[in-house]
Image (cartoon, rainbow, N blue to C red; front, side, top):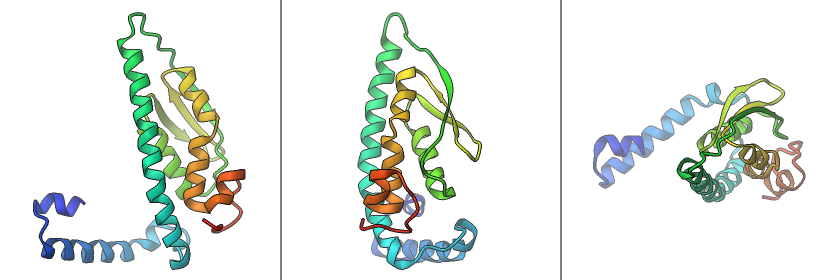
Length: 163
């Protein structure tokens, strides 16, 4: 997408060269990005589940935007910021990174630190932090990386479930 934005066109040549460039860069940096390179059999399932996760994330971002707008426009400005520790069920570096980015993208919450055993999260309201503690976002990210089994019980023992 960045390549297309720089080129300013959507012709076949640009799409083809952009795809080739993205594939080469992805292959070159696989060893840098992943502790163990993903297998092709599990990659397709993760990509498909990731495409299902994005609308859910956008919905959560939209809900948080409305809630934050309400707070900002409310006459008494009922903002009660707090910093709390959140221990996700996820333990692997990439899923925890996706979770932390998802939390930070959601207005009203911000991941301050990954302490190894949990995330330190700043929230604008106690409700925002309580929503995080309910674990819906954690389970959704777990679903992306571990299929239905990871979403249901929060375990991450399986490499890939029945997705």
